Image (cartoon, rainbow over all chains, first blue to last red; front, side):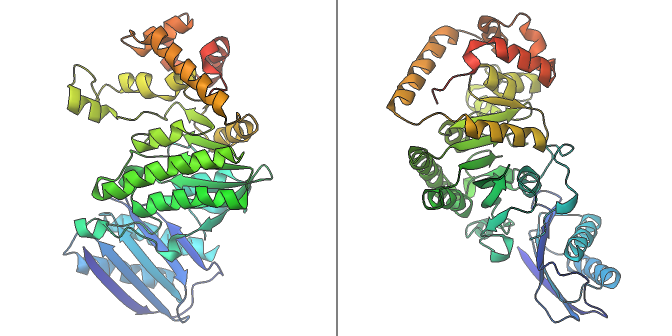
Length: 102
Length: 309
């Protein structure tokens, strides 16, 4: 199991008041994303547990792209990965951000 | 906790088979009424899976909590069949057992169990087997206290292994065509007895032997649902009101019913032979029937409805 943590600073907090949300399921090629509004409004942290070791650079790129697009300030994101492809990860992160904005 | 598109779920359009455990719960109960116990943010995850380098789930594959259904307070548990086949591990099983025991104090109108499981998680088998036994014991206590326990079965993992045993202790069961109820699954039977005995790749054989229609026709399930959350909701509400008493007379009637069943059908080689003996005119057409046509057949078959369980 490889554990990765990425910390970013955002320009804005993520809109909305939803305190937490979860999307996705830990299954083959899928992942579970838990979002919690617990950080300072300009901070975002993404912590990943993945059974597929050696893809830290890909995770870093996908997370950086998501942070730039969604500006998820204030959100701590925890991921249980089941071996998802980068496009699936990106989709789930954006779904999670949308749920938090509701 | 915001779930998967919670606000936009339409129970009439949502397939039970395709939905996640969280989507089923959200769409099954009265809007906004669900309160989760030990939700994902509490991170009660399996202590065993990391030893096997396997990923964990924040809820260990089961969602538990309280809600209202048609204005009536219930406790409910929903297994996520896509996480490790919905299998029982230590935390997963402990959450179900704890919910059932809480029912004795909280006294809901009913407990609903949304089964979607292949049985016990092999990586934590001892804890899983213990949880199965404890869940059955807890259901007995809950039913003895006059609280019905209703099982809903229509997920992709079906209801197998210890899940099948737990289902057998419920007051009532609702099943859809996609749902399957059994103890040993198709692959297990084939592995132990050979493909001549049971070919697990023969999907039609699997479904007519363990599927929802067969279970409904032989009285193994008490309602047959279309594959929508709305249909399961309707069935759950109806079955809560029709739950039988739990007493010695009921258990003896169940024993007699099962003895009569083995005497009547014990030599059948295929489910279609069972259906023919039940009085179904053209049993080969049963698997292809839509819900309405199938319900008409069920209404004519005496075996399907009983209060024995």
